[in-house]
Image (spheres, helix red, strand yellow):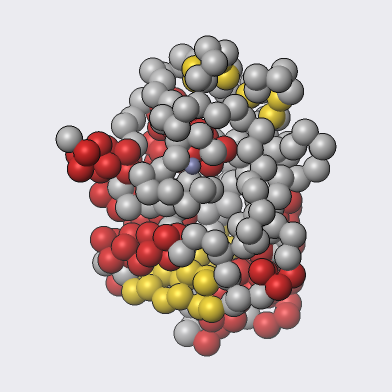
Amino acid sequence: MCKALVVLSGGQDSTTCLYWAIKEFGRENVSSLSFDYGQRHKIELEAARKVSEIAAVAHEILPIDTFSVLGGNALTDDINIDDSLPEAGGSLLKTAEGSLLKTADGSSLNTAEGSLLKTADGSSLKTAEGSSLKTAEGSLPNTFVPGRNLIFLTFAAAYAYQRSIKHLITGVAQTDYSGYPDCRENTLISLENTLRLGMEYDITIHTPLMNLNKADTVSLAEKLGAMDAMAYTHTCYNGEQPPCGHCQACLLRAKGFSEAGTEDPLIERFQFFSN
Ligand SMILES: [Zn+2]
């Protein structure tokens, strides 16, 4: 049986991919790899370790602390996260399927699929397939770390080569929130080709979530039996645990679970402890 390596951030998408790989390749053939890239929130690495433990797969962390030296992004530098959505008083936005996300000031975020997320000031975040999440200035948000996925996958491919692993799995998606150019299908196809040529190695990059929206990903995670691990994933851009509930990452996670009609086991875990 072929061996497979999952690039695991500790978030919900890569965790779903880990369970996808276990189903496709068999648990004994799957391992996971995370990167210590100087991220502000080491909680991500702890989440990846815990998820791998629950999934019973080998896990390794590679140190590549270079992005913080490159500078200019909110995930490694001590600068504010672009957060165009209004604050919601710190509480997680609970929504019934198909309803509107209510903000603290009583305005609403329309979240129907393919529609725009309206912010309080009337500006909008485009979430249609293939588009980018644009900030008010029209540029990519400062949570975009230039080159990150390209470098992760190149290191992962080199790691895989040394271990005769021919399948890489990454949780990138070009729908919903991920308007980042290094998450798009054409980028990944091109990178796979580059890696094959550059290493003379028959490696395949699998992107099982590429064309799924967040709700589809939640449904897939449920189907794959990933919910026990999902309770220990980390998404919040503010690095908070329990999650802050108002950053873009938290809002989109909540939207996905809401539209899938499923309780988020991460939220349930903290509710359990607070009761
Ligand atoms: Zn958050």
